[in-house]
Amino acid sequence: MTARAVVVPLNDSQSADTAHFLPGVDGGLRPACAFADLVRSRLAVHGVMLTGLGPADHGVERHARLALDEVIRKTGRGPDRLIGYSYGALVAVEMAHQAKARGLPAPRLLVLDTPIAPGPQSAPSPVTMFWYIGQGAGLDLSLARFTALDPERRAAEVARWCATHSPGFDLRAARTVYATVEANCTAWAGHEARPYLGPADVVVAEESAETSGDRADWTAMFPGGYRVRTVPGGHLDVLSEAGAPALARAVSDLTALD
Image 1 (tube, one colour):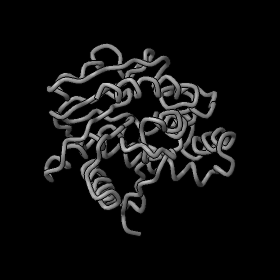
Image 2 (cartoon, rainbow, N blue to C red):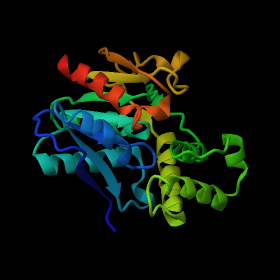
Image 3 (cartoon, rainbow, N blue to C red):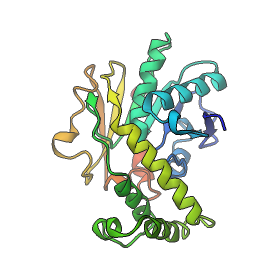
Image 4 (cartoon, rainbow, N blue to C red):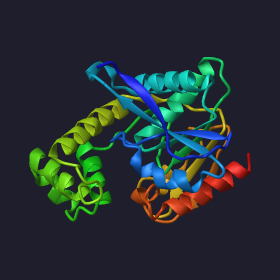
């Protein structure tokens, strides 16, 4: 199967103001749907999903190129806005660089609760990210206990909890998700981010360990300046159904300023 990107609408907006959403390490678009629905009066949100990836296809630059090619193919122009969460934030920044390199207008970036600094990236553990996915579905194991399990038992636990929200999510699906997480974490660790001089916004979760302390400064990454909005909760809450209204308000506020 040939590696390619697929662009799908996440809401039914008729707005001329569009944004493309780049998902986290699991590659799933479902978490962004609640937020996208809430901003449909202001923003048409499209998700970008990568499929058919082989070992040679994994890498932030490659993912960004596939995504940008598909956006241009579908719309006839470059992206207006790019929204990136977790691993997707790295892809969004790289897409913005590649768009500018092709002579396209600089997209406005929106980074969702994800620390990025210029240079080599410090990637999270794929097991930790897999645990986060389970946590989002209600997994009641601590990270230490989850890490101590053998790989098949980890997949079984994630499958059991995710199936409560997504009927049909089985052990095979959990294995596929972990393989995607592992490959994207490897791509994350091998990436060197470059400062972006175009327009940028950042949304920070108040209780997030990911963007607290010295990780809450994007000055080196966005030397032209950036706008910040804060939402309640932690990193996992940003795109949750419960967190979607706060994120929608923050994004609507930012787009109203443009």
